[in-house]
Amino acid sequence: MNIHEYQAKELLSKYGVAVPKGKVIVNAEEATSAAWSIETEVAVVKAQIHAGGRGKAGGVKIAKSIDEVSGYAKELLGKTLVTHQTGPEGKEVKTLLIEEGCRIHKEYYLALTLDRETSRVTLVASEEGGMDIEEVAESQPEKIFKEAIDPLIGLSEFQARRICFSINIPTDLINDTVKLMINFYQCFMENDCALAEINPLVVTEDGRVMALDAKLNFDDNGLYRNQHILKYRDLNEEDEKEIEASKHGLAYISLDGSIGCMVNGAGLAMATMDIIKSYGGDPANFLDVGGGASEEKVTNAFQIILSDSRVKGIFVNIFGGIMKCDVIARGIVNAAIKTNLNVPVVVRFEGTNVEMGRKILENSNLNIVTAGDMGEGAKKIVELIK
Image 1 (cartoon, rainbow, N blue to C red):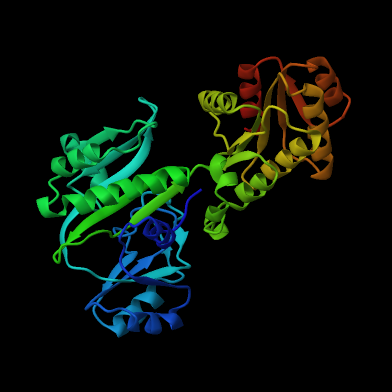
Image 2 (cartoon, rainbow, N blue to C red):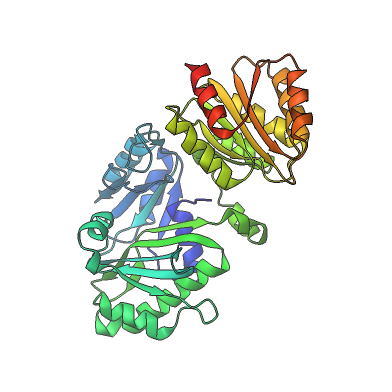
């Protein structure tokens, strides 16, 4: 789950991480009153969307007067920002953060993420913070420093100090920066973050260390114990089909292709998408119905796939362990009847009650083709939609 910058800063500030003062607005009429609350010479007007690269896309403006704040607010609200993370369709700006400016002495980069090679949360830092951190990581990897964190001990003070020395934090600000890093790690762990990023972390001319921009992503599987995070969820930033799928406990991600996929198990789902690509097709989604899906759950999954107008055919690839193939078959038949199925469907079953499942499909008199294995199924659905 992603949240906006202003929400990330609100959460970080609760953990003692300093952030600039700011106010959130959703219409241009609020811009003037928000500007009056700014106590610095300049204000920063920031578009709030779930994507990076806003600065390069024109989504961050520096205003030197109240009139400029108002003008930029009118310009940005309702605008579609296209960044390297939004894709060509971009995202509409519906919220702005109007924030106090600060005199920056130096910018740094700071992040916490899970390093899958070490299976440990890792602190990542660089003295080359700002909009071009991706280029720095690619062209100057020696400027990126990492500290793998022992889960039993947490982020140690000596590790934070070592990072400070590596990225050349001013000596008189090392203690403040170490404290910020430890608080940052505490926020990451206590809220089940998948990624936490401060870019840039700045040292100001008056000797403060603060998060000028922040990004927090959360592990969906941990939200049950972090209900306070759910208040930050912005459904306007999410795909409607993904929202509907989450209501039914389905793991669904919308893609750009034309072949809908319904699979049980994340690994099998990935393999299914790969084999569709290998036969010249393009998957329209990732959809894992889970290991013990009910007939109702399968019906809901089928309806969500068919709600995508780009879907020209569906490939169902099920390995029945706990999941029974006859349950899947009845769910498919029910969904096909409810939705007046008008696209080809190829089904590959293997495992528990496979013959029962195939008979249910054969006796349904619907436009459903069965396949003996995954390769045959992928080949058939690609041929059928063409």
